[in-house]
Length: 115
Image 1 (tube, helix red, strand yellow):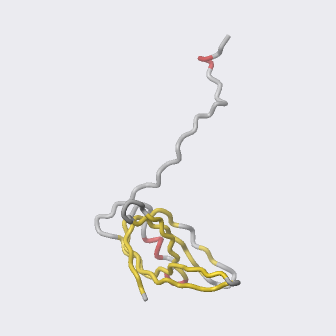
Image 2 (cartoon, one colour):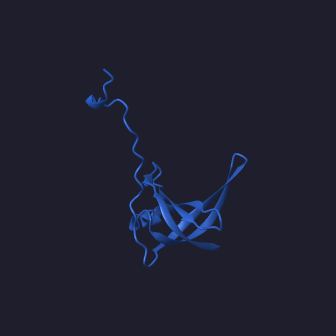
Image 3 (cartoon, rainbow, N blue to C red):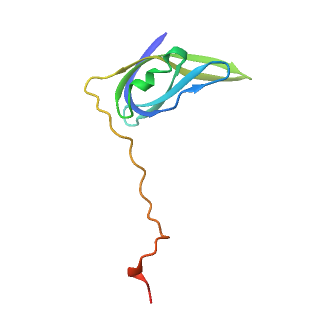
């Protein structure tokens, strides 16, 4: 069963290649869900791992995905396995926000010497 969601790209991770030859790349999109936006992590694997490289942080995208579940050592895990990524018309990329500047107290200013 396939699903689809639309949101804003928040994070695009680097592509990972494992010794087995398995390739994946993860992307986080923010989906407006009423009062509380949700950050959703999606995996692009194998032939689809290149798709997140076609968009940028800040783009509005629609993602087609499947929900995959598995059991490991008595625990159950879910993955959102994305297979389609479409940049929405009118979407403009915005640069990632810069981290706040923290003043460096170690700087010596001759103007405020107390003596």
